[in-house]
Length: 222
Image (cartoon, rainbow, N blue to C red; front, side, top):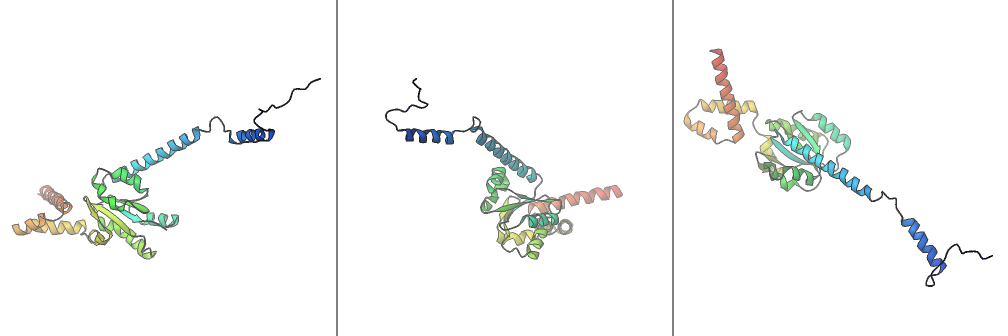
């Protein structure tokens, strides 16, 4: 009785070659849904990036100052401790430079472009009391001896401040000081008023608001 062979080989290949071909085919075969996984991961990654961009944009609403801080080497616990020292009007966000730049591109915050390198955390100051908003990080930096984790730069009123220029931000007068100075100037000779109006725009706005409030209070008390 003639028995049919289990496997047949072409005359050009030996049985050993066929065994290797079969082994390679078995090893390289993939599930039918294998190709879908990278697509799903890519979609999730893209969604997270878009969410980060929107988060940055939302923090920029009513933002007075945006600063970059070099956070290389900081631990998760240090970040948690730092966040606890910040006032409610200040937000600290860790995000990739490319995503932050995407959020600020075409806006006044684009002046922060020189900071788009290295590892940055982003400080969003949503109050016009700039010195008091910066002070908590300065204190934290000094207490923890984090000299290398300095401000990389900041944008205030559309102007870029390099690390060497931060003293100007940290020594800005408080709102009360500005009110006293500007209200006094409004009641002084014209030459003082002219010099007052040459002050930064935010100071002029603040004093005008204070002056209007003063007039309203006097009117109500009359």
